[in-house]
Length: 183
Image (tube, rainbow, N blue to C red):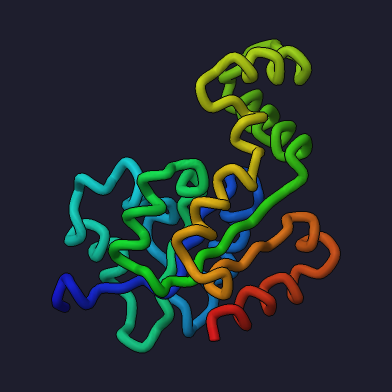
């Protein structure tokens, strides 16, 4: 495959702890869709230096007629990734899954607690400590601040916003909405 011809059909750009892994796993089972391995290539972010050949290898088992996609939730807050996605895949569908920011932060807290990263901190202390960091959890939940860069660089018809809470209401409808956006 010519490097210039390698295109991805859709890119999940975020956000973390907003069901991107669940969406990825559902789509991976669909026979017409080929998902990247690994799920989070982060090619347009910190793995960009690995080159397009490396990125292409993340899709090496895909059939020619399959829709190709990946989910790297860190893209939403990485302004360089906006420019890189635009450069390599200007017509790609961008998928964004969002969640109530407080519930999202609590999910991150639980994840960190499970992995031992926040010790015996209460959620309140965890949140307070997060606000002093460069990319605080609150800052990362200011979705509009980051999405406006994508809306400035891509046609709004190519950006699909999904809401995490809709999964609980109708998981099948959630995936169908996603599938219909690819047409």
